[in-house]
Length: 132
Picture 1 (cartoon, rainbow, N blue to C red):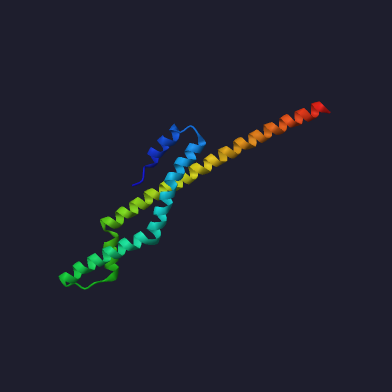
Picture 2: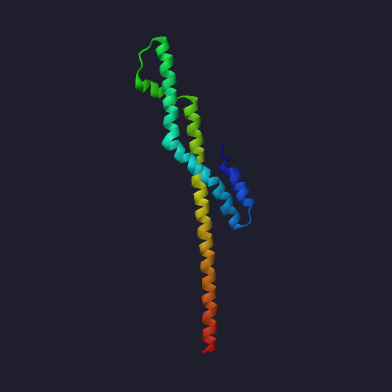
């Protein structure tokens, strides 16, 4: 569902303009954040409930006694639950990488602006001293 960090790094290295990098990161970051929130708030519990219900039906059909902790353990070991967890971790890693990358861009931009202000202040100071 989500691209790997290595794929995104390659794309970011090809981009030459900071605004393109911001735009690219934001198109990926939004869905990552949304998926992470959805997984934590809804999907994880939904999959767990579905797997518990599925396992409970199988046990009832076989005449076994249902133990809720055992059901939950089996549900957490299910392929669906593990796959959703892997996708969540992938989205979370990507989210952290993109936020860190964007913070680096912001710091770089702020540093460039500060250097320009410093150069401007030096020029103004030199003009002022020459004028007096």
